[in-house]
Length: 181
Image (cartoon, rainbow, N blue to C red):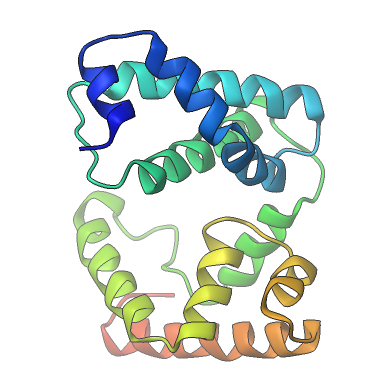
């Protein structure tokens, strides 16, 4: 188990200091993709540390960095929702892109969510490395096309076309699985 998780289980406040010193840059990079206001981003970072403090225990994450990434993303999304953001951000653009292949909003979320999650997990695992990386970076972490292209040393057009084809594959899969889109 990660040393920070052990300290959190002991309710040792030193865990917060270590977590902040080791992971603040990592979490800040995630949060800033969603929140453009620097004050909101800093507030979100404080919320992340608090959320982790509250969640561990009872949670026992096997991959603390992945657990932290998810907490950072969810906290940033919560801030967007809370602030009722009116601006068109990268995340709202990416959600709009996915709207062509995600289930209809009238599908019962409680009944279908597990099935849809399994289909999405299987779909993402089936993608080639670059397709998967582009898809996750764009639609999970909300990265802009330019940043994804820069990180992979490809053109923005390559990323855009790959994402378009990947969404098309997802739509086809969802239709095959009889999930209304």
